[in-house]
Image (cartoon, rainbow, N blue to C red; front, top):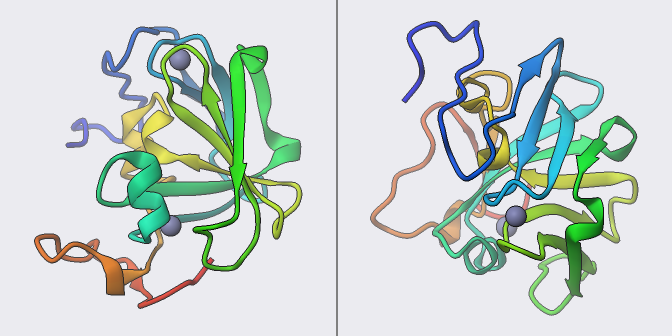
Length: 170
Ligand SMILES: [Zn+2]
Ligand SMILES: [Zn+2]
């Protein structure tokens, strides 16, 4: 759902932190327990892409049926707190491109924050759902593309208005 006025931040209680914000093309992304908080760009050029992915890797790592991602240029990320509370796990076995993907999780609550691919140095892939202003999920961070449609679960239909790709796009 979107708040009735999508021009203003809509920051419902979601997880333990309640100090998220969004203003001037920047917004907080916070883990479930609140220990880790980043400030990320919500406009270009810092915001690079927004997409949904149904690949098997995204399904497993999000413990869900698809991932809702946005890609940012690392130079535009500010760590507000908890960078030392991130733990890294990297592997390449299930990455279709063969790249190594390093995943940074909150050590306390397990929320996946940044994913960094060896094939895209200087960029981080984050989950749209970690962004505290939920109106941004419907506006600036709304996925533009949906990829790996061929492995979408059959009981879901594609994202409305999203550019569809059967396999890899990003
Ligand atoms: Zn956490
Ligand atoms: Zn994926």
